[in-house]
Amino acid sequence: MTKKWIAVLLCLAVLACSGCSLWSPGTSEDETSTVTEDNYAASLPAFEYTGVNPYMQAINKAIVETFGAYYEQGEDIVCIPAPVILAVDGSDMSDVKVWGNFWILNYKLNNTTLETVSGGEYPGVIHLAVAEDGSVAATGFDAVQDGSDHDSSMHALCDSYDDGGSPSLYERMAASSDLNSDPALYCRKTYLAKYVAQTGLEIDSFQDSGWDPVEIGVLKKVMAGGKLLEDTGSYDYTRSADHSDYTFEAVTAFAADPSSDGQSNFGICDGQYIGEENRVVINIDGACHLFEVGG
Image (cartoon, rainbow, N blue to C red; front, side, top):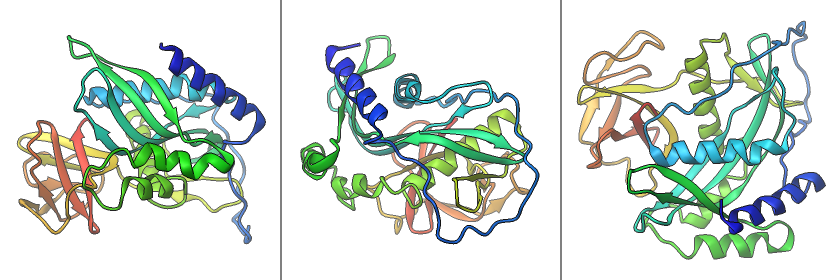
């Protein structure tokens, strides 16, 4: 771990203690809800990223082990990250830069609802190094600053790179601070759906304090080229959903895995070839969603 990474984490630890940069569940004006008897799970299995993307393997490991360590932990609490990926510059394998807002969210399970107990957002740029054997490790983090320097530091990090996508990288990062709307909400629901799929637990929703439960929904999957690909929770901002190379016309039974090419488990949709093994773009509701083998 580099001195740069350690210094940033120490800074974040101070912020976590002071409450300056942490997100806490909001309170709605209308707090009407159905009263049910609490039934909290005594223990919960840990979340694991099971995808084949080495960048995401390194990112999920780093943010859970570092940022996640600042929050209360216990057998009855599960940390499920929501790494909102906004852009990637892989031109230098010794210093791959990943722009994003790396949310950490912790939950307890009450009946079939994951209740948020703590969490925080960490917008900035994660640096990755790719070794000769292909392994990837996080080596540093450039954080968006709090307070009066927030906007200027975000501009400094985002304006230095242009991937030609829309909206601009700065606009994407600014929007990712709102956990109740996309892209953060999309990523959060996708990672929660991954957790449900990998654990087999009876979970149908999540709930922030003072708000109504939100349905998680099915983990979206398609079959293409003989491979089962699932939603990553990330958009491809460099492509247009107006383009289509093929259509998934067959729909499986609800939540069942597709078993043949051209099938999806969530509805009819269009797809795009992107020239990468194990990855496709799926057009959903006017946006380009990245799907990968193992997600």
